[in-house]
Image (cartoon, rainbow, N blue to C red; front, side, top):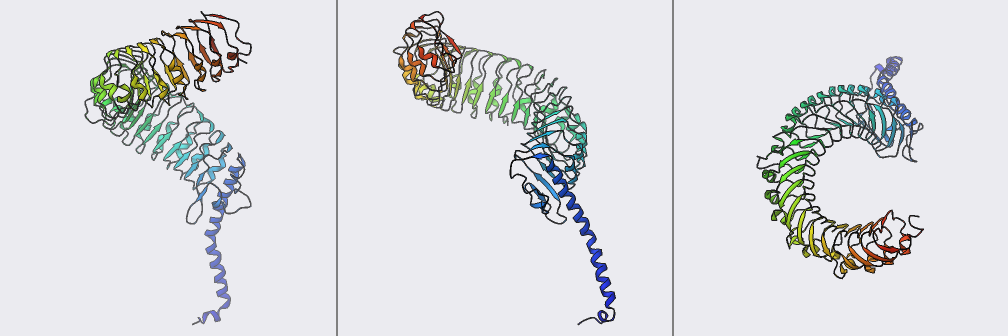
Length: 562
């Protein structure tokens, strides 16, 4: 049924339709203006960039549908505004223009792993909806603008691996929603803002590889959700706050390469939350704290390169989840605790450069989980177990140098197929050199300064099977007789060959010139005779060469070093 009013007042009907149409279009005009503002902001941002062909090809002035441009995400419902800009790892260079702040709905700005340079525009503080800012792995410089603290919704701040200078703005603590702060690998100076410990949602704080000074704020230990702290490679001093060692939420604590002093907190190793503790390269003193907990979550403990003294507590064996233990280069004394040999998960045990003495507990050589055992540069004594190659089936690095081990090198080591580095130098091993050719992964073999014998030099032919061998040290032993021509069949990867201070006689085999990668060759203090083979002159990588105290004649070929 048609209304009679339509016939009685046709002019009024037309007027109302026009009025209502105009009235309803007013919000749409506003939306169009806002969308146009986003498009112009993106084009302005693009104008300061250089990008590989095709990366920003869709960013065209002729294209109105900017929501379909590469790297752009718009809101799902009208008004269609830019909410995310993702151009990670696109090979882009140029500066970040201040007009990017006109993208007022922007929640995520991801420009990491490019070549952006210049400063960070303070106008970024106008982005009140921004939650994720990742500008890491670029060449940005200057100060971090304090205006960033006006991004009240910011949750993730990633500026790592740039060249930012100056101090960390303390006002960043006003961003109460911050969950992750990563400012590592810059040139930042000054102190760590204590108010970072008051951020209620902070989970991750990474400020490593800067030039920060001052002390560690105790407030960090009272942060309820903080799980990961990395302040390594700075100039921080003072002690570790007790509150940090007692944190109930902290899982990773990395403070290496600073100037921290004092004794380690007594509760540090009795944590119920920490899984990784990296305190190497500081100036800590005193003894290693005892472990009283029975179920510790610690998997990684590195206390190397400090001034720790005393004995290694046997209670360290209570760290039943430990995978990595490094106590290198301290002043530790006494014997290696037997309890360490019963940690079922231990893969790396590094105790070298201390004052440890006595025999190594047999259970240490019976840990099937061990991949790396480094106990060099101590005063340890005894013989290696005859079955060591079977009881350490996963061993990759075995470093026993500069101790007082004696006896023969166990033949069972030839069954340790995963061996990469074998350092037995500086001991009193006797007998024949085993045929190590059964070790396909062997890269470095140092048997120097022992009392080993060559027999018929058959071990050299065996070593030709070790295709990855890059270093062979046999100096300072009782090797006698002529050097075999099979020396030229050693690995093409061989870079260093040490044969000094033996009783090797006769001519130098010309086949030694086959070792094309050789850069260091030491044959001094032997009974070598004859001419220096001209083939040595063809070793283009050879830098260090010594034939002193032999009976050689002739000259080093002119081609040497060319």
